[in-house]
Image (cartoon, rainbow, N blue to C red):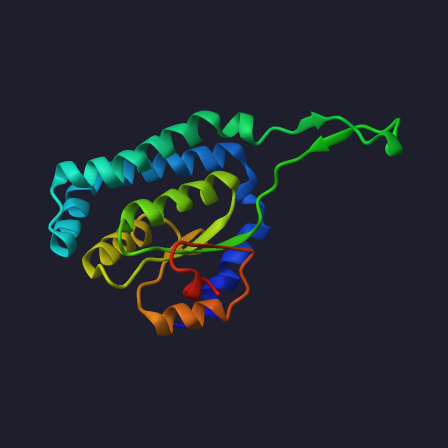
Length: 193
């Protein structure tokens, strides 16, 4: 796979400003929640294959956090995205100062192996809520959960917006050769460097 092509498509989609729309972001978060609920049985099956985790344990340690994060983002996104007036510096008076939240662009999320859904999808939710496009690279160690996330995202979202790339060190190394506006990584500091 040519990673530069998918990154370019995501950059182009981001630059069309579609992801900046608050209604678009909320709709996509709601869509992700619906897809997760629809595919929940497949997520349980995959994580059982990799870790022998029960449905109750998976819900408690993985999915409950994801659903809580989705609900929070859907509820709070309009207020998080609002322009906020802040106090001006005395040197710049009589100016007015504002904080204007803006998305960063195309993000890469490199997931961890130990809580594969939680550590991959919670940053995905944050990136979506902020108005970014995302490439998600789940850990290759839990191969069934990696495949489940790829199917979940790649079957239900356009690749220029969200895309999952599976693979190991070679794929991660090739992805890191691309230009991203933000990289989310959970893991050891040695690998992070």
